[in-house]
Length: 298
Image 1 (cartoon, rainbow, N blue to C red):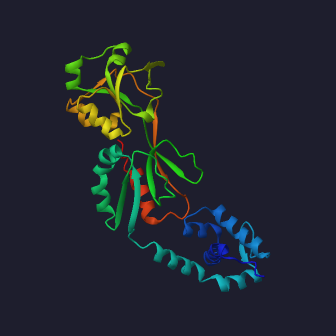
Image 2: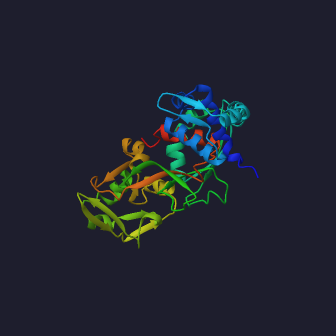
Image 3: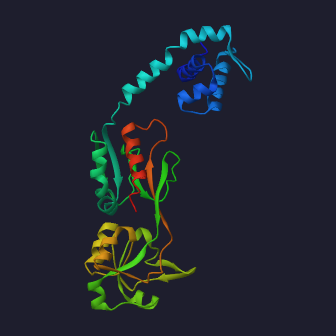
């Protein structure tokens, strides 16, 4: 039975490149990798074949008789593999990418950068799945998600995009009607709009100068959508915990006012989540790189 399987094709191509460039260092530059990695791959191939292909010394690299025979068969592989890669990843990334996130991230963070993404990658088209609940990326065949927190599932990869704490906000119209609270007790007496995912037993926890403050509102509405909560707070329906990066314009226009500016929640992690680190389609990789480089939350 043959000792070669398809996983060795890349190793054979690396070996052929070493022979043609006549050194590990030159081959590593050609392959855009490290010298030690090239040497390791050639050693893996020698172990798989059970023969020595190269005689190494500090000054010279000699191809053995067996190595010459292997090279004659493998010398076309670098071009073959490069041709296959080019056919699968043409010069311009294209195709559809399914991406999921909640509504406020879509409207406030992603929408403003969509035009730039389309200019850079006109052949990539996006399928947006907006959901305030966590989608099952694998079961629903979704390429990419933006979530709060990092995945616990080992089959998912998480890349941190942003970290931020929630602050306390109310509309100018609400404060004109109800007055501006100055203490924790007065805040608890305000009407609130609560996000169930962020409170425990209708209680919110904030920190200020290493001091912990718990607020348990006496009167409140509840909603599972952060975007809807922001709109409810803007409409004067109550006080709410919101992300500062998502309400910058509303604060500047004085539609919203931040209360107790030194108070904030524990930091939330926003991450890009996708099913696998290996064999990611180029269209998805391009979108991942764009979202990370664009610093979309700043």
